Image 1 (cartoon, one colour):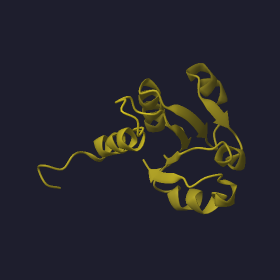
Image 2 (spheres, one colour):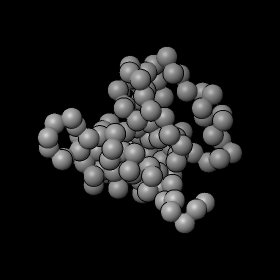
Image 3 (cartoon, rainbow, N blue to C red):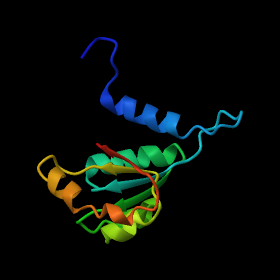
Image 4 (cartoon, one colour):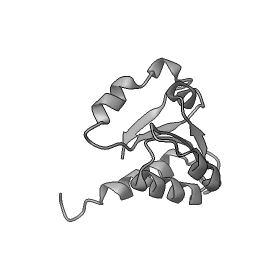
Length: 121
């Protein structure tokens, strides 16, 4: 990486900031509906950070994080299909590197209601 490149996490937040800008003259970014697949410590950190930025977060995970999500004000989905039908604009996949391909292969993309940006975190 060159000395002028930014860390990938900064690029990710820049992406959300740029993607959520409205076309109006207001400089306030439009909140995004962001879904997160997997909710380990890093995903929890990202969710809290993005919520502070005003974004709406939805989560699905093979582990039951429903109580934690309820305490944080996050919608939790046990069912991947229902999660994808919840109209996310961005979906972050935040699983272990070992399970990433299995998770991607199991995503029922036909449940998406709109074109959706998928990113791996």
